[in-house]
Amino acid sequence: MRLTPGLGFSPLGLVVFVIGCASFANGTSAAMPQVRERASYELDCPDEDLRVQEEFGGWFVAVGCAKKARYRAACDGLRCVVHGESEGLVPWRDRPPPGDVVTR
Image (cartoon, rainbow, N blue to C red):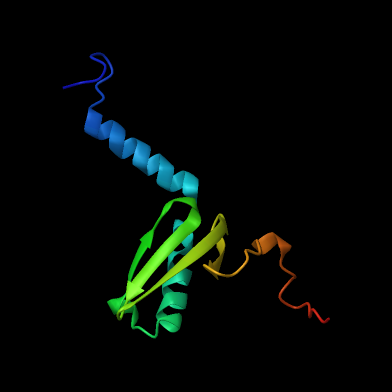
């Protein structure tokens, strides 16, 4: 079954295309290594026992060793920051340079 006879699009192909575009537009896939590392530390669970799933809006859910945590990522290209569910977001552009010391 074809949607448009002349163009050759199949319904399955269209679904795959839309999902692929949505994943690219979200742009947080680059944060997966950081999410896995943080979840492994916070859940006290080896990486191979973790299951991390990316959700819409930059959210990730990590499950492993009978524990669960949610994280939010903000990425600009390959530069990402990852925060826990209860933490406020600090986009990487608003962070001070690594050499600067912030005192109060």
